[in-house]
Image (tube, rainbow, N blue to C red; front, top):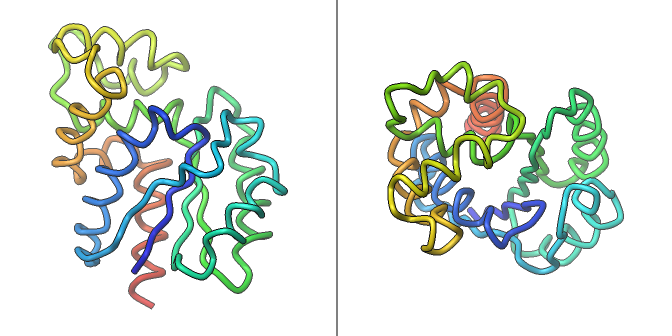
Length: 189
């Protein structure tokens, strides 16, 4: 099974998405899933990632070699983002498998959900923060001494977080776990 993860910008997001989804597919019964992150084209941001013509190009480019497409974007405090993703799913889900999810509030939240956080941090605060990268992720990468590694710490911390998929699912029920359940349903049918 070939899975293509479509990030809004792969340059940093790949270091979170590749390990998390590789481990997620192992956990849901597809340990041999070939998970790749879309690097061509570089969408370069949420505006481009939400344009159906841009997604159409990605789907057309990879359709012959991909069984599951997963668009992953940040929610960025936009409560209407899920509705826009539903429209994209409807448009590209016909005849192929296309899923879309928005991380509350940024992809770094999923990574942090799988980490042992500093004792003075409260998960409810992390989960509610719109600027997760700046307020929580960047300080953690600095504390851990990995801010100058690939992805500004995302590679090392993403791999570490991926070992805790059940915890991420439990802490992120509205987004990561919702997507995981939809993928499980698809795989088991």
